[in-house]
Image (tube, rainbow, N blue to C red; front, side, top):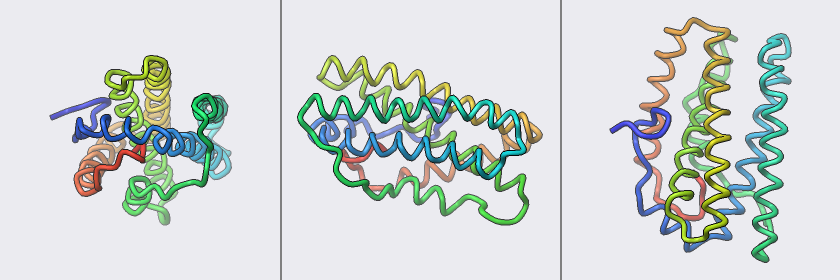
Length: 196
């Protein structure tokens, strides 16, 4: 079954109900996801400054991700919740285990872009579920707007990969990573206190 943005395994529909029962925890985790997304984009610019198109595209994404962090903080404060400490993101950690970190610079670059695209795709899918099923009307609207933005970021990463590397190479690696991501999702516990 193909789901949002080509992900091979859809989120278990029970996730929304579990997340809704742990709203403070999901918002805290979401805030840190946005902060980490901004950091990942900054890291791409720092590691590949010679790629002008990358710098041009990633710079506004950094600003958008940081704006999203601030928006989630506002939702937390509105409900009397506090940010608290960052949590371990087992999903992202497992993805990082399968990417190339050394060796051919182009392959390292490709994997970094595609893992960012995967994370954005999964976030987008989860935001869509929240926008459709959560009881809180203001959060439905909030997550719908974020879903649209995250889908744009997903496209940014895929298009940058195809800007610098042959499309067939990008597609082949993307297919491998989609399969690996589905396997990871299948083996993770269903947690309502985590965005991924």
